[in-house]
Length: 141
Image 1: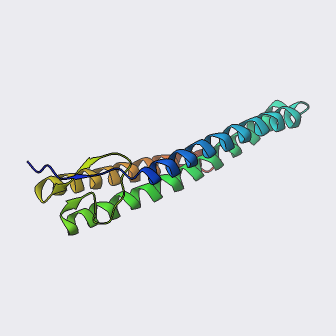
Image 2: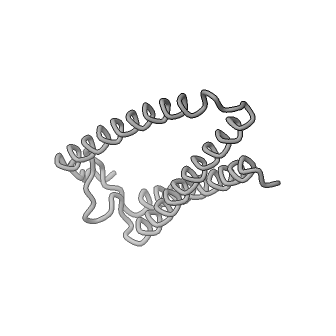
Image 3: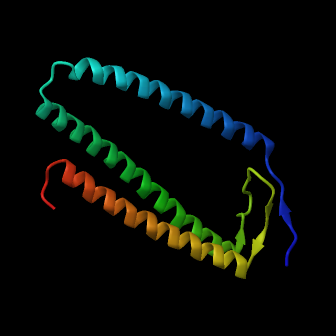
């Protein structure tokens, strides 16, 4: 077994932590604003209109999730191809968040195959999300 280790990049850890904290704060603020907007807007709204509005919002959120899933599927497929081409994981020039053993040849090929499976699963999930959002928008399946 190969015992080469790619050492963690401390700067990447700090930047990743800062981005996660910022994203969490923004998400909390958006949830707070949405909750108050929804309470003000729907106070005098008839139930049927509220249900239609919420279906539209949920369907729109599902479309956004589906797009994110497609982007992740494409990234996983591209990553799998690059791993297979280089015969190594992590890729040359990559920075990692934690110390990572370097996999070569057969081990890297197994990891590339796993990433291809992940890409297919993400694509299938995106198709399911698209069907659900299509249904919520009121279009027949």
